[in-house]
Amino acid sequence: MKLTVTDIQGKDQGELEVGFAIPEAGKGHQAVHDAVTAYRAAQRSGTASTKTMGDVACSGRKPWRQKGTGRARTGTTVATQWRGGGVPMGPKPRDFGKKLSRKTRLLALRKALGERLKDGDVSVIDELTLADHKTRGFVQVCSQLGLQGTLLVVVPEVDKNLNLATRNLEGVQVITAADLHTYAVLRPARLLFTRGALEKVGERLKDLIAP
Image (cartoon, rainbow, N blue to C red; front, side, top):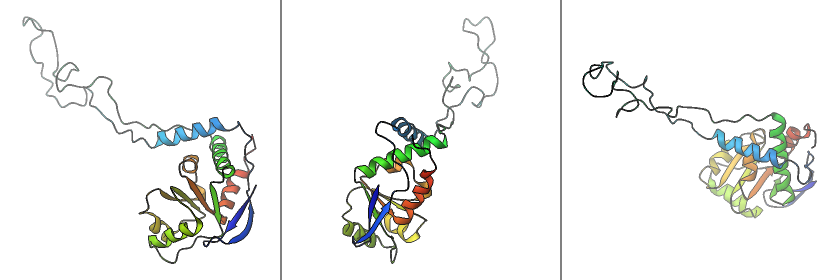
């Protein structure tokens, strides 16, 4: 598949061949589902925590003698049935992350990006260099390219001016080609790649055997 490359004014700068094969229809859907599920699970903090009997501060004194009071026997006030006692089988800090093989992750990214390409949601520009870090400069670029709504900008390397210019724009995310993942590809309405970024993504995906 070939994509038209423009400059930041929207003028034609030639074509660029996509450097990877797009999976056939009906293949790769499960990989995309698994990748999105794993990504969202990894975002969970897993910090919920309760105190067990061993964690609750207590003097260790027996509340009353074992026999003769008519009450149930007990040896501690931190037992689970007491107010202020330990919580039985309560949550503890944990990692919700799910493991995915490298092949599955790359297949999911290839499938997701391929579908966005076929739908015409991807724009490619020759280079994205801002004169300064002001937001209006990036907004002007989007206006010239006709980009509206949520946007993912993929660049080959970290660009300080670009990061500063976009951080106050709701719905705009900047990511490097090396960090591009399936969830980021699926979330926005439009994707904007620089030529160098798309070439780097192609390098990542070309080694994967087509399904």
